[in-house]
Each structure stands twice: as C-alpha cells, then as structure tokens.
Image 1 (tube, rainbow, N blue to C red):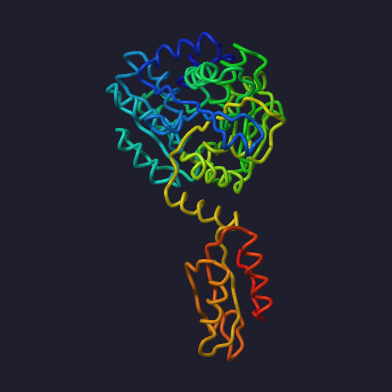
Image 2: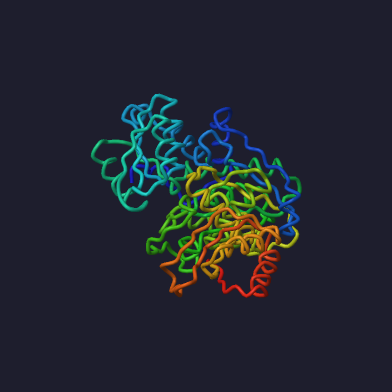
Length: 411
C-alpha cells in the first residue's frame, strides 16, 4: 500500500492530540447541544454532535485533512487520489485543492448527484467507475500506481483515523459527566478514532457502534475475529455501506468498542425524519444511523448521558422527498385507500362528503372503471389523504364500512 508508512496497529491519544493541533483553525469545532425532545423520546440524555455542519457537510474532512498535512513535498507535487461514495471525496477535494494539491476522486456510478457535483465544485477531478465502492476502490488503486499518486484511504489509515478521533476530544470537552458515545460504523475509521481518544482518556465511557443491517461488516468481523467480505447490498445509509471492515480499524474496535448494534432501512428513514421535524437538522442515512439505534432502543444504555454523532448531512433531495413521504405514511399522517362505489351521478360527491366529515384532506385521486376487476356499473377510486394519525384513519375506515363501501388500504 502506498500509505504503508502510516498504517499502524494502534492509534494513540498523543496522535489524536497531534492531529487536533494540525487541524486547528481549518476544521469547524462542531456544536454538541442537548436535545430535550430526543431525550424524552429515548429515555436517555441525548447530546447531538453535529458534524453535518462541517464545510463539506460531514466529519470526513477531519481525517482527510490530517492525512494531507502529513504529505511530503514530493507527494504534494504529484497529487492525491481517493475512492469514496461522497463524503470522503468532498473532504479530500476541498482540503487538497485549498492547498494547491491536485485531487482525483473515483466514485461509484450510483453515487448521489449532490455528492458528485459537490466534489467537482470543490476542485477535484471525478472519475465515475464501478457499481459499488469496492469497484471504485480497485480503479483508484490502479490509477494511483499508474500515475504515481498518493492514495488517501477513507478509513484504514492511522492518520485518517487520528483525524476523526478529534471528534472524541471535542465531545469530552462539550459534555460533562459523559457516559456513552454512539457512532455510526462503516469501515470503522470514525468509531476507531473516537474510541481511541475517548477510552484512552476515560475507559469508563461506553462506546457503541451502529451499522446498517444490510451491511454489518464490522459486526461480522468482530464475531469472526477477522475482516469478512459481505455480499453487496443497497442502503439509504450509503456513507456506511462498506462490505469489509478495515485491517487497522478492526483491532481498534475490538479493543475499545463495547457494543455494536444494527438498524434497518425504515428505522434509519424514521430517524432522518425525526431529526428534520423535531430538531430542524438535516442528516443523511449514515449520519442518522446512531440516532436510529437510540430511538428504537437497540442499545443496552439506560438513562445515560449520551453523545450521538450525526456524521453527515449530504443527502440527495429526491431521496429525502421519498423518506419524508414514506415517514408520513408510516406515522399515519398520509394514507391511500382504494374504494369501490357505484358509477352513478353524485356517488363521488357522497364519498368525498363522508371524507370531509371526518376531517381528512384529499391530496390526490385516481378514478378508474377498466381495471382492478371492477364490475360493470361500478368504479374504483384511489384516494390519497392527509390525516392526523392512525386513530383518524381507523375512524374513517369504520365510517366507510358503516356506509357500505368496499375498500382496502394501499401500502
């Protein structure tokens, strides 16, 4: 590996402190406010470490910059290269370009447009290659060797890990009597750095990692005692969609992380919606994974003063719109019913009056006579409505039953 000189078996507190000195003034000291709302919802005392407020929208720039600041003059002249689904890409692009260093980023083809555009805008040359991170990584390695560039790994590099660890130092300053830190896990660079900083300062503080259930590569590696390659899978938490844990990060997780839990897609989507609606904070899937675990009671923490790292906020707006729509349906604030009625004058008026009498707001209709197995003389209408919650939906469906309408809920 071209970064072999930085690959160590341990990341020390001194290295994290040195990284912090290097990053001083160049990386935002992100806030870590207390959330009464989330504390009430989770039964913990929740503090949110808002790394989504970084210049590039995610924590990744800490590690990227720390690695860049360790380059030799010869390496700076040649340029750097990285493989990333987005956030690491932007961190490398922004800080390399700001220092006059040429940056090339290889990104998987399905990378959200918002991340590709941002990476280009930060000054990097973007190469779209492969269906996933692993294929992009292989191409970046090929270009690295062919062009004599320095590869900046997104997580499996001690300098990168130490840079991410500066978050842990900040959290311990910001939260008095800290009991636990909850961190999303992809390859393990973020939790490895934070855990090293926190545990070497105060071993009593619990470290909890959270992975998407679709790609729990670190959990599998801990159970197997070595890195495990998982089958590729898609997830809204694309920032932590890593099929194999790191060789450097795994020992750090084994040594310092107390617990690893997983969350599914709906739980992550719900956490994004809660952050947006309750905290006015925008998080991407990977960034919201830690809070998802807390909201679902997945951890063993009980009433703890807990810092939850919100790792990033770079989410594609089309995905965000789908998450909001799905969340409203799941919460019972939007429902779609398929209702059979006689095809006669006034039938639709009678139906909409019943709906209005129960204070549901119609937002969309699809009126059909030819499909859904409709009898001659009948019609079917799909009606999408805004509602206050499941109780109102139940009342409306009961009223339809009592009025003799045949109906079903579309999910």
